[in-house]
Length: 337
Image 1 (cartoon, rainbow, N blue to C red):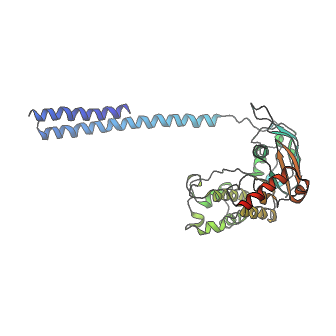
Image 2 (cartoon, rainbow, N blue to C red; image 1 turned 180 degrees about the vertical axis):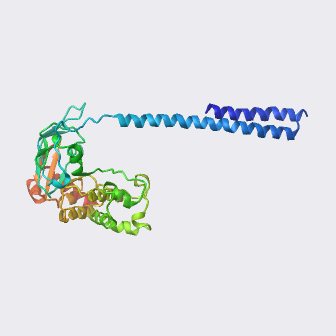
């Protein structure tokens, strides 16, 4: 900025002095124009040097930030004798025993004495009010949170003892806000499985109920979605991210409110597709969409960090309690709409 400012000031000074010299007939107009051109040729590289120095300094700061990230040591690492568990061998049993977790600095636990068992191929809906601990539970399964040993299990193995890359390869996790890259829809879906063919991509998109909408785009699967999927609607972004998770073909699928921008009817159809698919996965579906949750094999109801009810839709309605309140609220909202 300083060099650029000096360059601008030098031109202003030259104009001021030159105008006075021309007025007093001590300098001809032709000589002044020649001088002005010479000075401009000298000033431009000086200003360019200033911009170059600024760009270099910004790049240096960016490199420092990247190096800081690359040098960061993960807090969650493999145990000393971590157990290998290839994705192909994972059946999909998931269980929790007295699962308790407290965030650093928090007074109350986010999860407290959580108990459940999910069978292979079972579709489980997890519902409850905001702040009940649903996302904390979803983050704990792939060890995005560092839970204590002997509390969470996959296929009977303590997740803290499973090799981390194997555990995460066995779990496809879709958050509410997924990142889409500025490339084609096809490449976004294939991100976790780059060698997948177009027919496999289309099959995943059909399960996620996004295939017909993609076909309506002029470039179809070659459509560029822009940074973070800016050219797509919220529901389209979420279903594209779901397609990507389905193409990975992990035995365990976690949807952390991943269909919040999708209408209830479409969300229900997606869950039905997951239940009846040829390669049925163990699905944990965290949602506030009660109509979609109602068709799950089993529903877990969370409140204040613990599971307060579980059963299928009819059983929970007969029990009353929090689930009935959530369902009545959903029914009222449907009537008002």
